Image 1 (cartoon, rainbow, N blue to C red):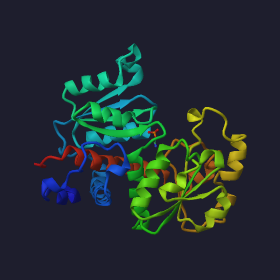
Image 2 (cartoon, protein in one colour):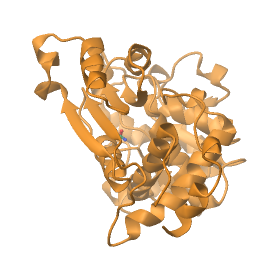
Image 3 (cartoon, rainbow, N blue to C red):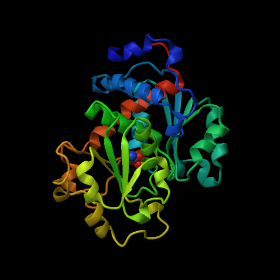
Length: 323
Ligand code: CP
């Protein structure tokens, strides 16, 4: 079973997360985050094999319930589950009885009545994952709820940072863009702070919540002033779909002040890495040229997402002995 076997040889009781759900990064201790990252390191090797499958979660059923579009999160949860031999069922809003008026509670209880072991939910409403977790006994993973949280995105980002730098503590991370509407920003702020990184949020004042400094981050409205100091530039998409009104004059102006391009990159450390959760708007927050440069870890983040989600599924389901 390769390097992952070491974990399965340990006491099974030590290989569980405290909560049945993963709704917020704040539910995880620093030790639990480290366990997930260590385990993901072992699971990453499975995706490099010709036969990308282990029988670890055979007989378990994982349901993905996506009420909002997703490419990365949905696909990587489903691949992660399949690589651990779990059975997967995928439900989207348009193909479910939600379009006939069924509530989220009834949908979830229907799924649970069919003996699902774990539900991954993405929903446009903040708080929906927590609500679901209260309604059902099986575990719930938040795959992104409105502008609230996206905990597995933050975990895969931590994994990618640790893989690149060998550490997280002491690094300086700038999260740039639409902080106000970003569940990725919120989860990453919690996660990075918990692991000892310094975080500065950067963007136009209209896209940065007024009291964000209460989360222990610095605030800047000037990317060029911050750029020379940071180790990681984490760029966010402008979420026009979550903005009730226009919060800056134009995408062109946003790109000129906060977009990363080759000229702006000249002021950065030569060791700077660029991250983005995707989907990207090339030409707005990041130029097409930068997105394809080796400093951009965007596809590495996606690759690592599968391993990290394998670790989360394994630890939430408590794992089973490998034959
Ligand atoms: N990063 C992320 O959540 O991407 P998707 O919307 O494609 O899942």
